[in-house]
Every structure is written in structure tokens, then in C-alpha cells.
Image (cartoon, rainbow, N blue to C red; front, side):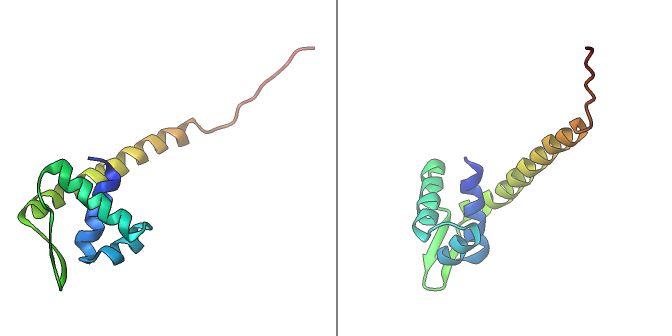
Amino acid sequence: MHPRLLKTFLAVARTGNVTRAAQEVNLAQSSVSDQIQALETELGAGLFTRSRQGLTLTPAGEALKPYAEDLLALADAARAAVDATKADMAGSLSIGALE
């Protein structure tokens, strides 16, 4: 499960609309649909019920949602931890040379 797919899944879950989700994640509508389809195929379950009122989560989608949120939060925390080590490495370097 690629984080990009989970981010798109959460955007669709939040908005209930592929077009609005596409705007939120800066993708084409067709790309959002493709990503949702790829995630559904990977998991072997439909994640959304499609109706005139929009998209709503299926029980499988409801089950995935908290895990997707946790995984993305963990990925952000990991990035922040790595970035913090980069900041610790920053400093000045003095180089001397003898003639």
C-alpha cells in the first residue's frame, strides 16, 4: 500500500467526491479514480459505495480509514525525525591549511 494511494483514499473519504478530492491532492480526476481502483484491487474489497449523493465508505473503507490515517501520520513523523537529524548535523566547518 503506497502512501500516495492512502492519501488519495482519505481525500475521497473526506470529500465524498472524486472531483473535489482530485483538487485537494492536485491530481486529475482520472488519476484519483485509477488510484482508488488500484487500492480496491490490492485489498480485494470495494472501499466506496457510489450513489447520486456521492461516495460513502463501505465497511471495508471504514475499517481502512483509521489505519490509513495512522500510517500517514507515522510516515510524517518518520520524515520529521530524519529531518531533525539533518538539522543536528548542520553547523560550521573550519578548515585550515599549512603552506
